[in-house]
Length: 312
Image 1: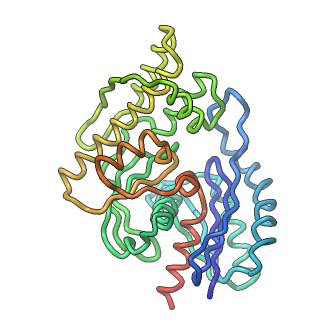
Image 2: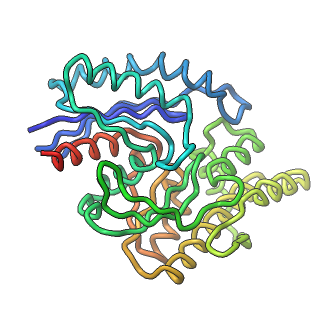
Image 3: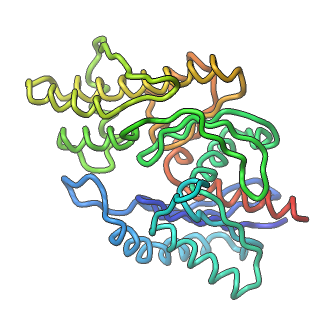
């Protein structure tokens, strides 16, 4: 039996996980970074400070109930595994991972935040065997809105971007519209609750270019609706239905142009029940459980364990 620690210090969540290879169970501690009311995010310098402040508290809580020290460590080193992908907040997790690995002579593995999202979704859907073949993954969050072709790789996954937003990310739209409507950041759950109050049909038209989408118009349309005095619940539902239409349109075109493969949806936006239910009904893809949809370190711990096994 081996236990692997995963560390993820993303741009709104501090997260630590322990993955037990024998039981295949994950123990996780995570906490959102606090954002002041009325604001749509944090400066990177503030995010770094808050991760430093929270990481020790979460580690104490996790290890106090784990009962076993890790046999290896994985961490999120950057948002995506492409040249130039960088955010200072990931340095906090990297620093802690390197310190622990050096002090206790543990194997250390670096992954992208995106790879962690994909692995966490598959873990929670009990489909880790997908990592041995090719499949499609949609990563839809506040910092990424992409359709991906994923292949086996070492030490990382082989991830090829097929389609993406050409402007705002889906999570950005949700948070901007939510704050516009007086909700606290991050706005996803509250916007979903507000949208549920509208029970009439909402007509939307996605903006698609090839396999890509454009989402900035959704924010502009929502602002116009608010200025016109439209019901806040209608505006919330319009926002979510617009994002659903964009992701569904991208999925259809991806399948048409690149062929049929297994499909998984990951990222915080994919925990929204309106969006999830509609995509499940049409495309029959896999979805992460809610706690593994938003930013988390579980996938990083799982990937570290799998890489350690490969290296024997």
